[in-house]
Length: 443
Ligand SMILES: [Zn+2]
Image 1: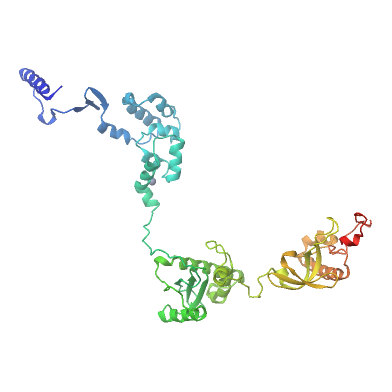
Image 2: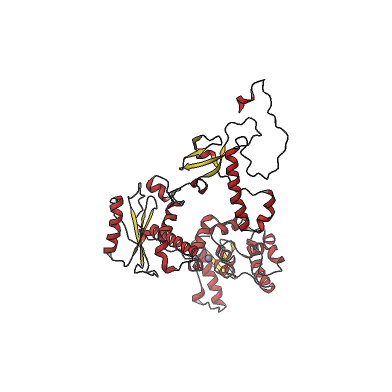
């Protein structure tokens, strides 16, 4: 139908209407259009479609919460059922719903494909990953972008889970060697027995090696005084130290770490918080010599390139720190039934080597890798009581150590025997005869 034909039809219709004295409301008349909205439908080019405006309330229909509202929702949906493929299949979970709130299947069938937001809202404002998982597991027609957009636009999420703006911090240039960049921060005022109420923390960015100075104020003169001590020891840092709050996250975090170590030390020593100054060195020692996961080694190792020693001067296990009987790997054994280790006397040790006296009286240097702690020997007779009485156990252990030490020096044959009370077989053990060679060769 072209415009002329349309105009001709219209003219004839009006003539007839005039003849029968029909009056039209001019505001409600539309002429020469290709589609018309009528009774909830859009009629266009001879095709009937649902009217989008009339669909809007249906799209925003709240999730049914009672059998009555389920009926109402189903009635409204069925009005448009001719445009919904497999309508009866889709509506089945909703029609069968008996419990409220609706389970997820019924919920999905009650919500149109545009209501991702409602889904997000009904499932308690879950995040991108979980919503996407839900959408995929239910085979709903939403993309990753839909999910992201929906959650990004949700005002409730924005309010409850605020994503604070990250101001453009000056890009962190990674330090490549110790004392290249330092971060400085103050902590305090802290309760204190002395006049020192602040801690000035200086952290070397490369190694995370912390320094802390108790200060009485936060003036620049104090800072200069403290830094001068540092610079006298280690020289000037490469880059200017920074005190700006944005780029100082590292130091702030270290303040927390140091203070936590301080409070733990105070707690374990039974001191009050005001006495933090006395345990600060211990706290610093602990932070410096323990693994820092971000650099995967201890700050001390990173800063100085050697292992940190404790106040006892030893960075070796306690059983290597004191002279006394220990176990040494037996490299030559006649049979595989021979003991793995023999008891030797430790004379001195450093982290790598130890000076030991062998059972035959010779002294030699061995690698600490072949040494092991001897443990405390408890004789069979006292074993049962040892659990009951700690003090007695200590006594027994100490006397046993003396006994066995003496025995170890006398007995050169089998040094695994740590207690004289242990019962042994009296059978003579013979070594296997190997090709007629003298057994001595294998000893
Ligand atoms: Zn939300």
